[in-house]
Image 1 (tube, rainbow, N blue to C red):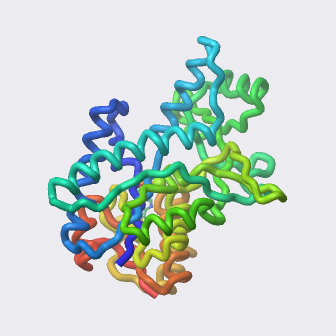
Image 2 (image 1 turned 60 degrees about the horizontal axis):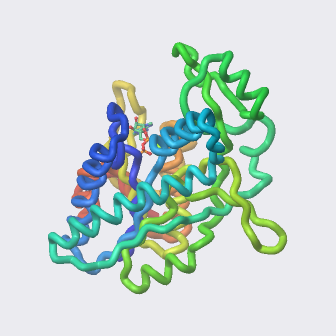
Length: 319
Ligand code: ADP
Ligand code: MG
């Protein structure tokens, strides 16, 4: 069985942490132990990993800004994405190798710099449609200055905050994984691959078949589904900080979902049970996976991953 695991930001940095190496290595190590347990439970399983990069990319973007005063040019968003793939990929590669070796599992493990194709005509690139907040919070004055000087799209995203503005970048729908063939080849050879980190580096294609990086951020769950499809994954498993998808979320009649058929989940989606930018893209990614493959998709928390694969926890979306 081939399993695509998509890891949320909390697998790398917890909400209240600043993001030191020690903190992040610790969190990645806890995650690596879970993944090692998944493999130990059934050594015929093949694993492909993807992960978010929100806090890391945010910090790195801030460093880019601070570096300007020392005359170091700030790197744009596609480069920042590539840098975080290296940073986070290294941590997972290192901890996974260690935890697997302790269980006497010697499956090789590699992380890749990985591009994801988007459409240059995606609505998110048009006008002020961009919707993904990135980087630090700004005062109105700072926001207007960045708009004037750099042409940033800025939006007032948290009206109650002292600094309510943030830069927003387009979040286009991923079309396909550019390095899909190479990744598939590695998996066929039994390698654990870490790819499409942070949703992948967004690129658009030119007439000659080449690619150009763009300033955008792709949702990691939607990009994870494209990777699942590229590698022929049986199961798409999205691990986050809640054990299940919930209907009537936050209300007295909230109800965690167990096994749900495709049509029923589509109905809940239409009724607006899954918030945009958080549970929404996870559910959409799962629906796409089940529609495309007829196989299963799972949403659960990191600590329930082993149980969920045994059918004993999480939300299971089936055909
Ligand atoms: P990740 O970093 O794993 O992508 P997100 O914060 O993007 O995590 O998404 C998980 C969050 O989605 C949960 O912590 C929860 O607050 C929120 N959420 C919104 N709607 C729902 C829902 N219907 N069911 C469960 N969680 C929901
Ligand atoms: Mg998310």
